[in-house]
Image (cartoon, rainbow over all chains, first blue to last red; front, side, top):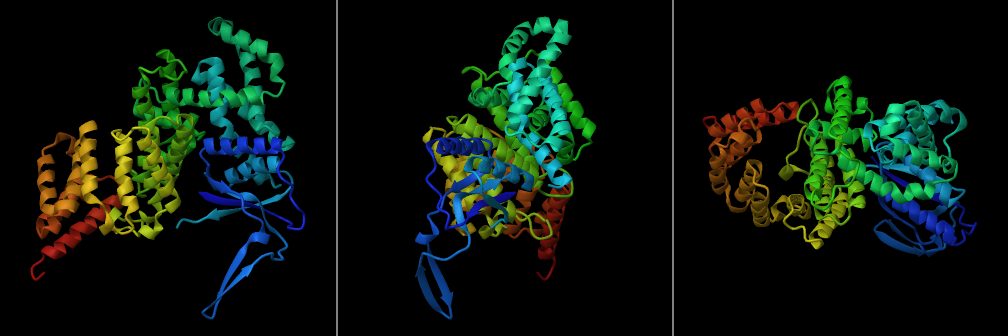
Length: 113
Length: 426
């Protein structure tokens, strides 16, 4: 089963750059998850202020540049996992949060193409 | 947290830690059976304590600490064994003081080698293929005997017996828990790859039962392959196998229709192929080719699978290239099944008559007697040549030869279609 995990945060609370120690622990964690064969893809996202929105309505496109006012935005990154069940995805997410620090991750099952 | 959630979390952590725990203990004890018993003791302790006290921050280290204490107790109680394990016992006793400390680092440094040793030992050629499969799923996959039994549709005691006997065979043959040296490595590695591929194939086209596929087994094999590719990244055949598994797994969503009936490769809706897995497979294949693995059996099979994966529509398939690849595969791994597949590719590249001539040369092959795909392929080619009544007989024969219910239905349907074509006025 594939799961997409992402962490949401308050865009008004700036997240400082990762300390070298956290960076190292996160690298080790990514290595561990890769070696366990569960991490299919992972990455971070540029801040919402740099995002672009493309709208399509009545045959017309509107392209909007940020910043956007959102209560929560995706912070810290995302991961696409392949695990036996949701419990395994939860456990890997706990391990991620232990390193990333306080926050809330959402795990959603990814359906096939 | 609800009790059910807690219980699920505890069992999940144990399942995730199982392989590393057994692998580490196998290094300390030199005995897979003993390692598994000690791991089981630690698991029982965890199941007693964690639901109440919570899962510890480093569950792997917790389990290892408990298991090593049990190992020390075990050696103290069993003086006979203690002699045999004197060296190990001393090492463990000396380390006892440090066991309390955080040994994450030592654990992390050695764990890859431990896992690799465990895989090679579980897949040792001294064991029957069935025993290797069961032991690999149990020790590396962390599956329970009940889960393995369910996957293979056999009674649980059968699997339990198989695992017990396998461990006994390893002990009796004094198989050391180690990575084989350079001279033995190719043969031993091919035994490991064979086990992973067999697990995948049992899931991909179940040999028995009502379902054509058991995707759980496929997923388990793909995961084992990915683990192995991280442990032995420089082996082209490992990357070849992973490429093959990723590409074949990419088709799983398209291989059955809504009712669970099989859909053949050329009839599949290719928009339902998993592009992420295809890309992972193509990348692994490229790695294997860069490592000089172009004549490896798994690399060749992956290259063939890649020809299909690259074609967005069936008529974009590079069949002449597939014919060439099967030709090389037949050289490095001569097999009537490979020849049969080559005949299919020839028919696609150069017409059904050319394919049929090759298939007919295989008809007398003893290894293919009873193999349902031979009449199935022959029927298909005859039908394309307009020889419908002969095709009907071949499909009926294929239906009689398979023990998978879904596959039997598919062949029976094709026999009926051919019969309709053969009917007068058609």
